[in-house]
Length: 256
Image (tube, rainbow, N blue to C red; front, side, top):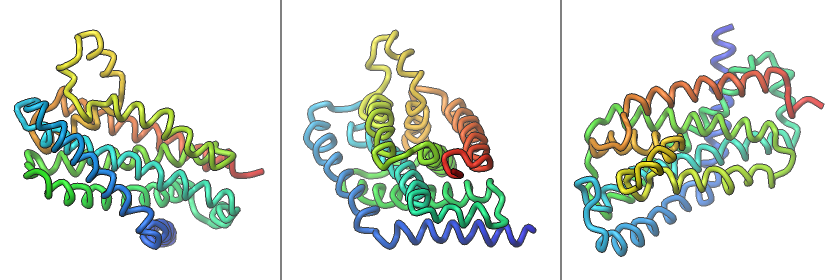
């Protein structure tokens, strides 16, 4: 049983990785170009006028947030598009009739999203090194935050794909939810610049904790407690994984 489950998990994961690697020009190159533009515009041009933030140059301050932003969007997009395509083409039914547990299906798809997110994170980090000297305060926190965040949004993408009925439904959440939350999540500014009331409002945004936890790993500074950030990430991961597992197990949005 264990060998069968491992083989199924490995097969789904390899299929997911092959999928985005086969079209690497569409999946890996655009984030590198987009982040390069952010570094040039917000870092070099605008950052020189802003000066320091949190005791670091503006470019150094925004690098962790930009890496996290690319990780969030790509982990979400990978799983939501892949799973919905499997639904649309009706090849998801092959998994449902196979002797594969639902949690293996969830882990396989999420694992593909995490793999793409980590690869994108490495690419964007490499690009950022052409603009600023990268500092690493705590490598363990960087790795843990990266994995937990990418798995969280990969699972969220899976849940979105389960309920989606058209390809337009896939793009609605990134456009109307993820993008606003990301830009208001402290990527480009410190929460200490906001009035006290808006600081508390901002702390209701979960992406604030992910960005700041990641920034603490690089710079050693954070607007929120990094332990709280990691705790919330673990809690949200468990919650969304449970939801995704139950949806797949019950065949919601899949079985007709």
